[in-house]
Each structure stands twice: as structure tokens, then as C-alpha cells.
Length: 190
Image 1 (cartoon, rainbow, N blue to C red):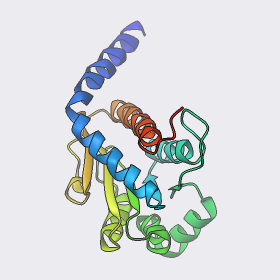
Image 2 (image 1 turned 60 degrees about the vertical axis):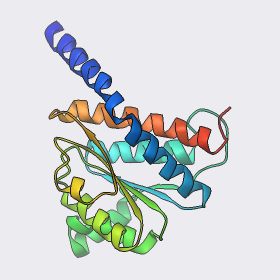
Image 3 (image 1 turned 135 degrees about the vertical axis):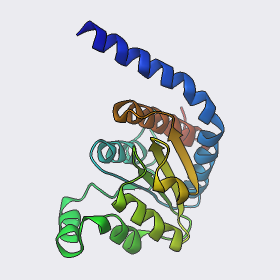
């Protein structure tokens, strides 16, 4: 048991050290999100499984607050409304669960962040395609080489790992960094 703990912590820390290689990408994405929010645009999030949880978590950090008290920021997790999701899944199939929502709600200048540890999630990738058609900026929180999503998104944070757990840990770490940068960039840090 102790070996599992030690191995997991070593893997995690080694990957955290590699995040420095993504600093420029993180800063570019932060500037994109700050500009979108400053222009009263919406940040959309989507993902499956653990990435769905991250999607809801990070949307909540922007609507609620991350560090200090501030106005709520426009942010929506596309996997948070079970009635909408089950309606779309029932009528159109799971591959369209996010793209239908982007088609209905997204506007030019908004940002869609697709979270996929493999970059191969068909429903996330389909939403990214629809977003691009609507001139919505696209960001991928990816891993395992980036998969198909890497060729779709405008901006990618591709975690250099094959471990789903470690990729998810880095996604939430980067998400928190972005939230802090957004608050600072919008002059809302306290």
C-alpha cells in the first residue's frame, strides 16, 4: 500500500514539474478568457466522467468566486443540466449532447473549453467543431498526446502523460491557476 502512495506522489510531482513547459500556453489561454469575460462573453465547459466533474467545478469557481468576493462571471458547464442532457441523448444521441447546447447558447466571441484526457471524446470534439463554425474560441484540456481534439482546438493544454488520473490532477491544477489569473486580469483580486 505504501508503494502505491509513494509512486502516485512521485508521478504527480514529476508531472507538476513539467507544467512549466506549458506556462506560455496557460498565459495565452488566461488572456483569451479574460478578454472574453471583459467583453461580456460566456465561458462554456464540457467533459465526460471526471472531466465532467472538473467542468462543473471550474464553471462554479467563475460563477461563485475563486479567492475574493467579486461579481459572478459568465460560465456554464454543459454537463450540469440533467434534463437537457437526457433530452438530447434520448432524441439525438450522446454524441450531440454538448454540440446541441453550443448551437443553441453559444455566440461569436464566447469560449468553449473541452476537457478530455484522451482528446478522443466524440461528443466533446463534435461540440468543438460546432463552436468553431460559430466563431467561438476553442480550448482543449487534453492528455495522452491530444487525440483528435488537438487538431480541432485553437488552444491546447496537452498534459504529457498517459495516466488518466495524473492528467485529471493537472487539469484541475491548471483550471485553478486560470481562475486566479482571470480574477487578477479583471482587477477582481483582493
